[in-house]
View (spheres, rainbow, N blue to C red):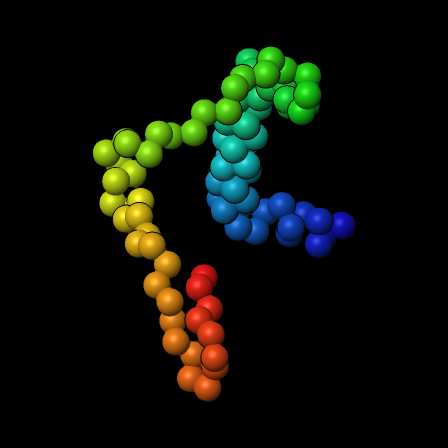
Length: 86
């Protein structure tokens, strides 16, 4: 009986503060869950929207688009008889 009494009477301020923090966190989570019901979208059940890809002329994409490659140049292969275009 003495250990139970000592458990509640020692460092009661820290226990009270931790209880208040736990209650505040619980209340914050509970208040965010009450008003919103979020349904998880299931693939194939929603409206189909056409796929949209950005145009190559967009100025934002300009630095990332490599310049067009020149015509294939024949590369001589040492010891080879022919040219391997690629």
